[in-house]
Image 1 (cartoon, helix red, strand yellow):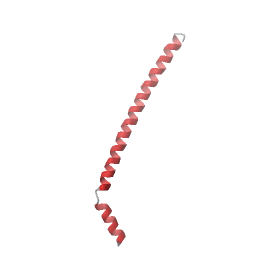
Image 2: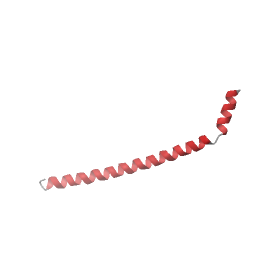
Image 3: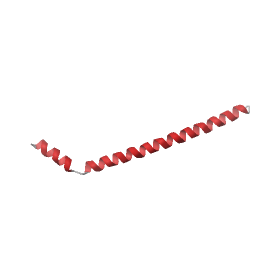
Amino acid sequence: MQFGKTIQSFLAETDGTTTVEYCVMLAMILLAVMVGITAAGNSVLDWWTNIGTDLNANGF
């Protein structure tokens, strides 16, 4: 019977809900950061590739 009371007590608490909400928010923020870093990284890679191509074309 103690196990049933423990489960009811756990389900009645709202702290778990808040924790899940914060975890979902954190996951969304991390996803946005990863997308931003990937996009910036690809742009920088293209930039350096263009510089290398221009240097090679001009004999450097």
